Length: 325
Ligand code: AQP
Image 1 (tube, rainbow, N blue to C red):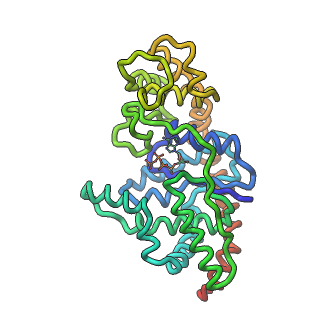
Image 2: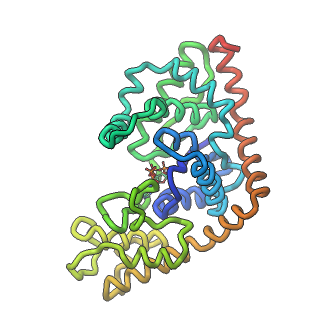
Image 3: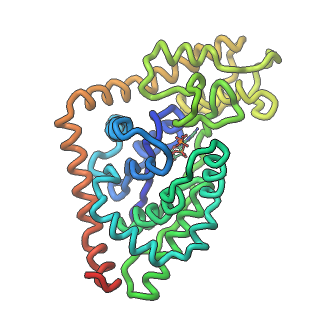
């Protein structure tokens, strides 16, 4: 059984990505799973090519440094020769109305129109590219949050339609809900989730931040003036967020970790030290890998070759059934 998960280099990796996804992939990943850096998805909104290239390498290095089996990791753009034709075939199997129904497109395009920046056609069609990511690899399960479940549903619809119309080629994937993980929120505003592409990074703990910077960001975290040391997410969201981060780092519940503190300052010190210790080995290994481009390229090539190998037979079948090969 193959599970496929991706992460987009839309900004530097933060502690939310790490605790909510990457650490789980490293701990629970199966050799049959696939993890990929979805750099093509980062092109759906304005971006800088050099930064994208750098962030893609950095993210690949972080996934390896975090302990994910290197063979199971690949970079999406390394599969462009396969994903390009497959995306076209799937776009030609997708009704305009189906793509237009995607809630995420409606929300993200509304944001862009609001900002006065053009909405890219890629933002509209990327769920079809996501279907190609999934279907090319023959993934059985795709762990996604609520915001992506509709896209996996589209992949299911397209797989069934192609199989029914032209012939059996695709595994019909399932969306699965990943085990509940801490939803880390921004330290400066606990109503917002911690975001890679946040315009203000004062409340975002990046995985490669220096320990001193992490300490300063945690010290400035917004809490409240109630001076109550309890875990009450609704009434004290800033404190609750800190306790959730601490709990996730220590593999304990936020209620367990809150006992024993006598001030918010103590909580912040403990959070800073726990995050620094959690990230230290990953930061060190990532910097080593980034300093050794030959090794990183070698790892990248192995993962890319494995993913390409998995998809090539399926793509040949699809093109033949579609009448274009
Ligand atoms: N704040 C978070 N807390 C816990 N988990 C999180 N994830 C993202 N933010 C948090 C998880 O990280 C994985 C990769 O996510 P993605 O690349 O699809 O990015 P995203 O979910 O759109 O969120 P980001 O990282 O903040 O990026 P941008 O700025 O591009 O929106 C997923 O498993 C996600 O749940």
